[in-house]
Image 1 (spheres, one colour):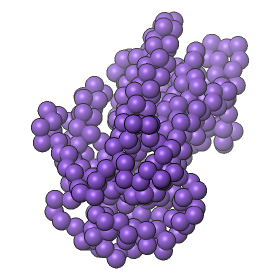
Image 2 (cartoon, one colour):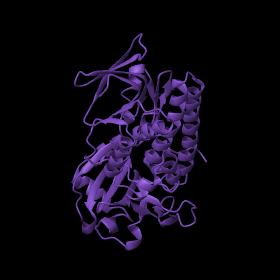
Image 3 (cartoon, helix red, strand yellow):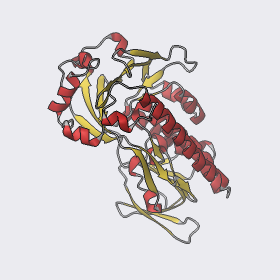
Image 4 (cartoon, one colour):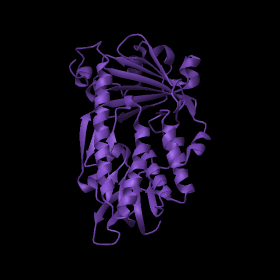
Length: 366
């Protein structure tokens, strides 16, 4: 670890690593990625759409990603707006299929790409605080181990915690607060048709929705999403209550059968945007910048795209061109508005439970 960097990126997930790789491609090599984990713990977010290939190609890592042999995702089944399963596949998508990811392995892969390009990456290292001073490298970063380093520009890629942006008094504007509880199964323990193994399955219920997907490591993830008060009322953080609710589903229950998940993981899945998401000498990427409902399946794609766009803005800023930072901020706002419109349209397709508070909160009058 050197004492001075042009750019420090706090967070080594898809957004942070994409930013580092894209900066390297633009000739900005004096960068450091600070990651709090060692990439071994399970991570949520398991599917990416076919157009992710364009982003891998822009980053120059498509061949390396392809060699990882992630399981193909051929599309999705959904019971949404109807008791019957609808079918949406990628058969006619010019980009081909999407992918089911082993998220921990995928994030490790991106970190390795940073290091292969000569970028500095510290694992098991935690950001504590920052101060701004009169100095050629004005941002002084203090780590949890009390070490201090400086940079000209800092990137917040810490996810929804937004640890860096909050140091600049940025505030999160929450539009929708969703809570999800995920269970993991061994694929060999559940009943499944071959056709489901390369598809995702989405099923709406009166209090929210359920989701099932196969993972590349012979695992299956099943998730329920609802409001926090519903999760509490139905005790869905308890394996027994969660499994009982699962068995009442029409389409996912026949697949999961009577199998018991190995564990449950609860996570916040809010729709929110940082205000502001960027300013002079700092910006946010990924879920630090804006977070989407997981039903959009855009989280990882958004993170990678944010990283690419952020690198362009940062490289310009380092050359004393501040206009790109303003453009980056405006683009994030426009993208979030577009996402909210699409989200409202999608939730409006489900009209089976007009008295349900969950659905009422997410629908606009027809």
